[in-house]
Length: 79
Image 1 (cartoon, rainbow, N blue to C red):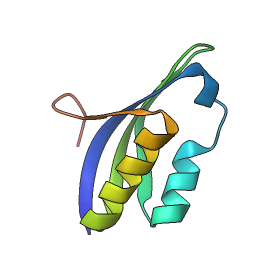
Image 2: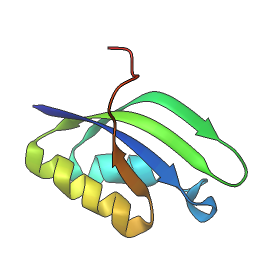
Image 3: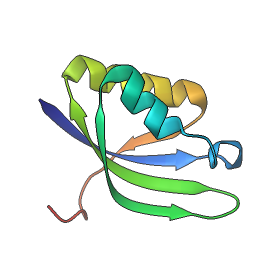
Image 4: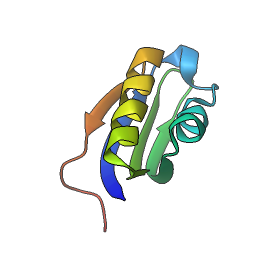
């Protein structure tokens, strides 16, 4: 099983939508929330995602199609 750390930035219109849950169910990806900050205007979540490489890529593309900015994480997350 592959793992990937990503930082997601959600626009205001998606803050209350179950986007991570939908991606996880649809592509059999297990999300582990490592850090989150949500305000009325923006949502930021750092996730450790586990799944097959193919499903991780499909999940990333799904999030981007929904309007979520997906960035790889480098650095400051405690292992």
